Image 1 (tube, rainbow, N blue to C red):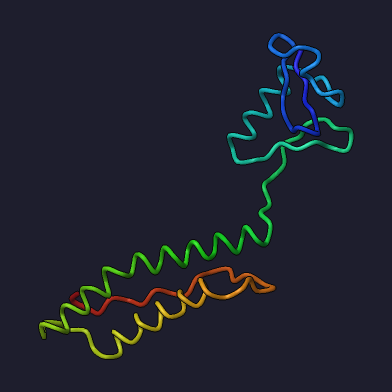
Image 2 (image 1 turned 45 degrees about the vertical axis):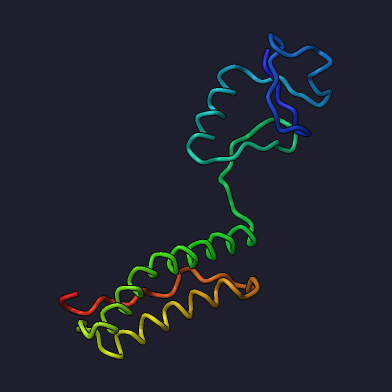
Length: 141
């Protein structure tokens, strides 16, 4: 028989676990229910206990802290991804071999400044839906 415990949020099989190892709040589930839960979990759902302690698969809803962390990770990636662009701009300017204008360079500098500000600010009440827009590359570059 298979069981699910709401306190441990774990599954137990009496063919593997002793009676002493199975929590007292464990509820019996069928093999089919267990399989359906595993499929749902592989599709991104989370398994949690319902009001009666039985397992159910529900959509994952990240906390605002998790949303903010993901937003900051996106900003960090945008900053890292733009490093090569900024290095190439600097080399081109230093060697006098660039078609970039001051406005082009300024747009990238401003973009990176916005990304850095995301990394240094506290979590706002409302997390933006999108990161700042990456500037376009000048024609011919």
